[in-house]
Structures are given as C-alpha cells and as structure tokens.
Length: 328
Image (cartoon, rainbow, N blue to C red; front, top):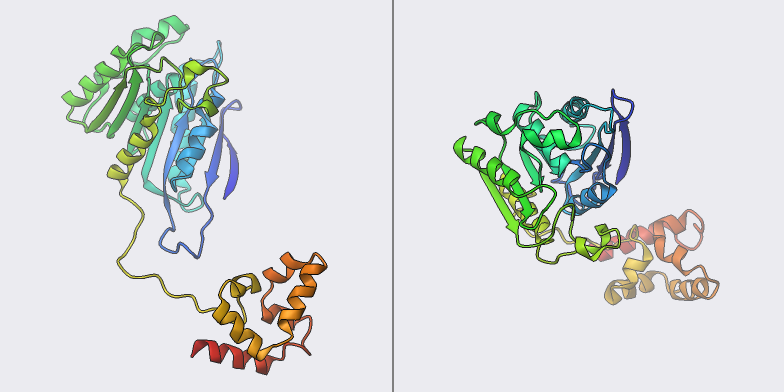
C-alpha cells in the first residue's frame, strides 16, 4: 500500500490517498472501487475520528480510500468546501489509472457537516459520485444559520440524477435531529432514487464507527448496535458496485523447486527429503546457520540464490536435476 498527499487549489484543503499496490497473487484486481470521505466538524474543523479510521476500515475491504480535509473555519464559506469536494471528485476520475480505481465505482462518505457536503456533491455537483453514504447528515438549508453559514437548498433539488444513497443516524441525536435524514429520504423516494436507511435507537451524534477506537475516550461514542452501520454500508456498496471477480476454477498448485525459499520447502517434509537426496549437507548447513542466529536469513533464501554465493556446493546441474525430479 502507498499513501499520497494531494494538495488542492485551496491552500487549506488536502486529500489523503490510501492506495493498494497491485499484487501478482491477485491478478484479477487491477482497479478497485473507491470511497471519498468527508469528515464532520460543523464546517469549523475536520474531525480526525471520522477521517482515517473510517478510510482504513474500507481499505481493509479492498477499497482504495481517500480522505478530504476541506476548507473550514469561521471565515470560510461553505462554497469553498464544496469547491474542494468537487475538485477532489474530478481528481479521482481524471487520475483513475494512477490511483488504481474504477472511475465508475466512486462513493462519497460523509458525517454530519461532511454528510451535508456529500449530499451537496450528490445533488448539485458537476462531478457526481456513483453512490453516497450519509452519516447523521445535516440536509435542511435553514440549519446553516446556526453555524453562521449559508447552506444551499438540497432537498428540493434531489432528482433522478442523484446517486443511490445509504443513510444512518440515531434517534437520540440532539445536534442534527433525524428529521434531516427523514426529509432527505422522502426526497429520494419522490425522485425514485434507490436508498437504504438505518435509524438506530441510540448513539447520539458524532459517533463515527461507534467503537472504542474512535470514541476519544468517551463511552457515549461507543454503541455495539449502532456500530453495525459500517458492515451494513459495506454490504450495500457491494450490491451497488458488485464484488471482486472470482471463478469456479481451482487455484494452480504451486510446485516447490530450487527457486523456493527454504522456509517454505521445510514446511513440506516430502519435498525437503527430496532436497536432501540431492544435497545431503543441506541439513547440517541449516542447523549451523540457526545456531549462529542466521536462521531467518537462510530460511528466506532459495538454493538458486545460495548457489550465487556457494557455487561449489550447489552446482547448476544438480539444481536442474532436483527441479526435474520435483516436477515429475
């Protein structure tokens, strides 16, 4: 995996990119679905609790994950945050090959004010995502006044172009009442946009993953039932984007040979016995290396690599004969 930091046009905005490396052991996965995460924070901050821990959770499921820390602050307009989000979406779609993502499988994930931003991009964005996950989102325009911000009208602008949406919130949320989620659901329903919603009995506001990791030490942010939103969202995303490709074919049997690290060879007693037929001194060499504290080094080496150091002990003709015997 590699991590990149992309600085956007607004100096205060940056995109953290978590990207899986290509692996020859997983040749069918050349591009991956992506999640673009907008942390909450009332447009005054970007909560770390709703940022990288969430990204890494989706990363563990095979997604490439991106966290946008958008422009915030008392003097910053919400429009700047929207411009950051729109730019981030364009960056992902315009650099899909480099980022190893499928540009047609990008979901935005937002919490609270970040949920408002995710809905904003979904409804009014020039570059709309393919799916949206909104956590205890603020969607009612009048709420912006409480923050000293000017919110755009989202609910009235939900239409058939709005992407499929997953919503979750808690009944006891005193900061952003579930009315915000319910009205947004009604708008999605009216526009005939597919959605799934989960209103949990408890959890309050700002619970993130609802686990101790993201609780900042407060038990009120931990709720085992509410924490199910993540697995539910993952299943929903799989329904939207499909799963990674598999077939009914059995994986090829790996043939151990003189190019195989000795540690793997020694795990198979039958193959190791064949090695000792051709190189009887190998067992003594391994034991001596272990006694000298060089066991890990020897276990990571193959006989072919050892031959470059001790050609007199591991002749090429003998190695070729060993490989032929193993193949047969």
